[in-house]
Amino acid sequence: MLYTDPQDNATYLVVRDRRPRDAPRRRRRRVEGPSRRGIERHHLFPKAFLKRTGIGETKRVNQIANMALVEWSDNIDISDQPPTEYWPAQIAQRGISPQRLAQQCYWHALPPGWESLRYEEFLEARRGLMSTVVRDAFTTLGDQTYDPTYPAPGPVLDPVLPGGRTVTLADLVRADLLPEGTVLSAAGDSEITATVLAGGQIRVGGQTYDSPSAAATNASGGSRNGWTYWIADLADGQFSLASLRETSLNSAEPQR
Image (tube, rainbow, N blue to C red; front, side):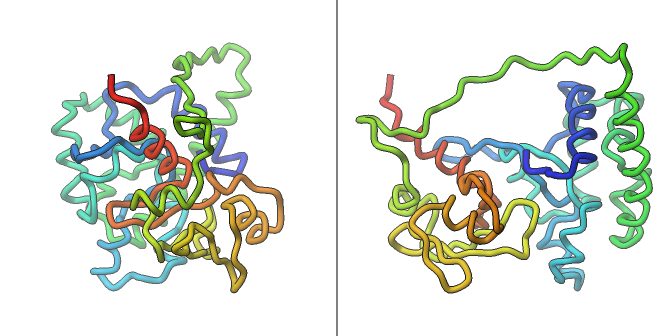
């Protein structure tokens, strides 16, 4: 998760615990190759859709009220569809009851009929609902009777290829998972950008770095894990370097 604000964390913890298994999510088309996984912020009003409507300024597009926590694997089918198209389709596909849908819209601060609102109206309405959800999230976390049930953690892959060699950015470039010239942006701050070079280095502000963490530390002014800090803007979506590294690891696993 890339949220760093404590209010975001509180809301996330409660919403994660309360989201039912059949809650509508962005669904990924099946494509060749291993999956990329992770949870990140995504745009409820997709960037490309907003650009077509004349809204292209980064600050307006990346408003926190336009963000939602989704899995990487749930992003592809949405693509640049307007919410008036993808939202009803997701609801119909899931067959969610009106009561459960209302509950989920509340915890995700989605205004009634949000998919049909003008973008600025949507932002204004959702900001007010988000403040209510944050308040209720903190109240829930402070309740001594609150007893959340968390799923068991899945297996964790070590970032090491067969033979013991660590996965590098150059490996991702050679595998065409991270093409030369890919623009990277900082998680939670899209104004901080970098560029991937042919040899697997990262260029930030005229300086070249051999590792994602060195580039991230320089860009942020503090110690950072570059694999989770940098988000790659690729043709089929945005992916953290960590998720691309996992894809590389999966593809290197021997066939059984």
